[in-house]
Length: 257
Image 1 (tube, rainbow, N blue to C red):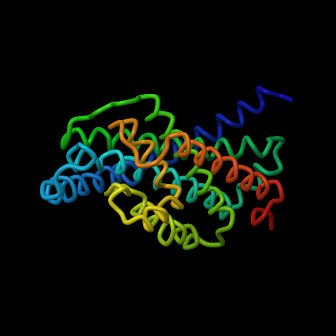
Image 2 (tube, rainbow, N blue to C red; image 1 turned 180 degrees about the horizontal axis):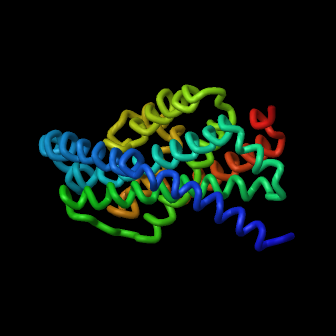
């Protein structure tokens, strides 16, 4: 096992991924910050002033963690989905597959790029939120742990989406018809405790509920679901998606002509 070779391969893939989205930062980092600013203005200032408090905090304070998490999810996912599919479309992914590099290094490299972009966008959105509401930090460890695990999870999801995709249109189907609805129904704008019992139970099937609530706990110290269950769900999902991605790459599914 040549560890220096593996580290060179990992750092090369990761550096390429970071440079890729960093070079076009006006397209990759600025738009999410602007979009979230509109959410803060519309939902926080205009609508939030009429809603009042939620969970003992102002509505603006309540939705800020969810909006940060929403930006992390969408950007981690889209970064890996678009980047990996571009490599597949241009046929340079085949160079990685024939190189003496383990499949897990390829996965870690692309996922690492998605995590970096997700964290960068999350940081920018957090800074933007300071113009609208004071920042509360209940547990820094919970914030860091949750955002890292969530960005890893959705980076893996984007990787799997890219492997199955046959065209650039295919990488937008999952975010449009599955990811976006689950995010909006994941407790970003409301507490699921306000829902009738049937809809509360149904909401707990949505994995994003656990991520949003764990992240909100890190900021405000409140959560609609058990933190232990939240982290168990996230870690189990990561294990499943990683195994899925590893098997697909190992078999060369959709990657070898």
